[in-house]
Each structure stands twice: as structure tokens, then as C-alpha cells.
Length: 284
Ligand SMILES: [Zn+2]
Image (cartoon, rainbow, N blue to C red; front, side, top):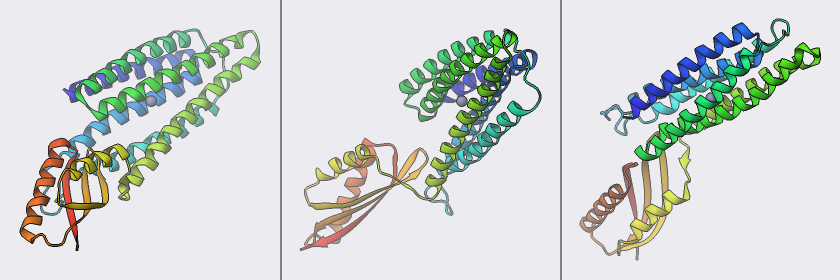
């Protein structure tokens, strides 16, 4: 289901990119060319995102007992480098060649693009919430952001159309290209930093997630105190490291049983907690 929706989104983006590339070519609009190249980066995100989530689902084995969830960070880092290069490419195209009078075709295509991206993002966000899918929600949010970026492009294209009356307005087209470059670079850089950090074993500090785990554990009577909870990120799941202070008079056998019960209870409530390791410190 999720894959089908992603393919639909990809096909919409593909048609939109072709339309924008053709439009930019025939209307001489650098802003529209920048927008088209940005659309290319969205398609790369779609494809690599799909491949990444497929690879990340590979079953754990002897050498990778915690599975391959982190592959998602690696594929996203590769995508982010690609997006940054496209951002620089947009800048290069914006400054190459002379500024020319833009034709009104560009305006029609930008308006069409805003409408299509807005409808696509609403669809992706709705389906993402229904299916509880992170990939779809991320994609929907990104498409919504794109529709707003195209509104900016609309302003620059409209201004550059005035270039037939006053040459100064031609610079609006160049400015449109520069702004699209900055927006694209911003996405690439934040995606790069986010995924590099995750690759370097950054832990999740989400208070709600940690409090939910604490609430479940405090239901168990013989636990004295929860000393530490670390959520190691593995893409769509976690490896939780938990440290508990426990009554020292309890036998090893009993501790083993309590640990197993806690693990069962935690995984029952939270499918993201795929691996759990519990350490116990005895106190008198
Ligand atoms: Zn985008």
C-alpha cells in the first residue's frame, strides 16, 4: 500500500519535472529551470527512500544481530549530497547565459505546479496518517513545502514578465534562481547533518517516548528506581538500553523473570522497540 502510494507520488513528480523542464526551455525562465531541477531532487529522494526502506527491512543475521535499520541513514546521506550538488547546479545555471525576456508560458506552468503539489501533499499527508507511515508523512510535508516554494517562484516569474517594459525586472528571474538554490541547499544540508548524526550513534531524546517507557516500567513493583534509558536509533526502530535499580535480596531467577515481563510489556505497547537490553543494579 505504502509502496503503491510512493509510486503514484513519483509519477506525479516525474510528469511535473518534465513539464517544468520543457516550460523552462521554451520560456527562457531561470526561475522555472531552478524549480525543475529542485523537482529532480525530490524524485531522487523518492527513489532512494524506497530502496533504503526495502534494504533496511533485511532480516538480522549473525554479523548484524540488530538488523539493517541504519541503512536508511546511509541512503539518505547519499541523497543529501545529491540534493546539495543540484543546489549548486541551479546557481550555475542561473548565472550562465544572458538574461532574456521570459514568456508567459512559465507563469501557467508555475501556477499548475502549485495546484498539483498542494493536492499531492494533502493526499500524502492524509494517507500517511491513516497508515501511520513516516515515509509518507515526510514526503507529504516536503511536497507542501514545495508548493510554497513554487508560490515564491510565481512571484519572481511574474516580476520577470515585466522585463519587456523595463529591463531591470529581468533580474527578478536571476533572483528567483538564487532563492531556489538557497532553498534546495537548505534541504540538502539539514538532511545531511541529520543523517550523519544518526549514523554517529546519536540517541533519541524524545521525552514522550522515554516517559511512556518509564510509565510501563513503574507498574512493576520490585523496581526501586529507573536509572537510565537510552534509545539507540535504527531508522524505523530502536534498540533500548535500560538501567534499573532493583531490590538486592531478589534471586537471579526472579530478576530474569521480571526482565522478561518488562520486555514483553514494553514491546506489546510499542512496536518501535525491537531490541531491549536491561541492566540491573542491586541495592540493599
Ligand atoms: Zn522539494
